[in-house]
Length: 274
Image (tube, rainbow, N blue to C red):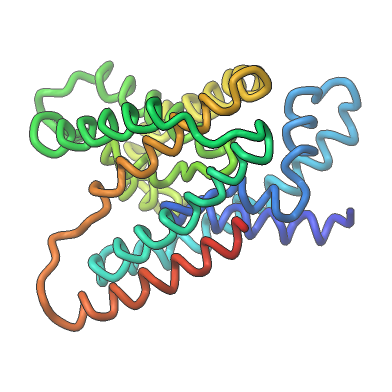
C-alpha cells in the first residue's frame, strides 16, 4: 500500500467526516484500511515505526480532507440550508441498509427490532429535549467555565463514536447536540480563529482523543460479543435522529432542489456503503 494511495484514502475519509450521514469508517472499510487502522491504533507500540508511519500518512490525509471540504460545507450550510439539510437526510437514509447488512453478515440474523424501536424513540426524545427544553449554548452568560469545558469534552467523546464505528456519522451526532456548526467553523478556519476559540477547541480535542482510545477497546469487545445488539441500537438512534435534520421548509425552488439532492445523495450514500 503506497503512501500516496494511503494519503488519498485519508482525504476521502476526512471529507466524509464533515458530511452528516456519511461515515468516514465506511470509506475506510471500502478502501480496505479500516482493520489496519484499528490494529495500528490498538497495537501502536508492538511495531511502532510501521504503525506510526501508517497512521501519520493516513491522518495527514484525513486532516487535509476535513479542512478543505469544511469550507465548502460552511458555505452550503449558511447559504442553502434547505438543500443542504435535505441532502444530509438522503446521505443518512442511504447508509442505513449498510448497517442492516452488517448485522446479517456478522451474525446470520436480522436486527433486534425491540431494541431498535426503543432506541428510535429514545433518539426522538433526545431531539425533542434539545429543541424545546435544553440546547447547547457555549456563549450563554449563565454558563460557568467548567460547564462549557464539560460540554465541549462530551461533544468530543460523542464525535469519536463516528470515528470508531463504520456506518455512524460523527458530524451527524454533533448536529443532534447542536455542536456541528461550531465545530465546522473551527475546522474550516484553523489558522484564523481567535484565541478564545482555540481554548474552546482544546477540551473538544481532548474528548475526541479520550473517546477514541476508550471506544476502540470497548467497541471491539462489544462487537465481538454483542454485534447484533450494538448495531440494532445504532440503527435506532440513526433513524430516530433524522427529524433533527429536517429544516423549516417553505415552498419554492429551494424545496424542489432539496428533494432532488436528497434522492441524489441517497443514491451516492447507498452505493458507497453497498
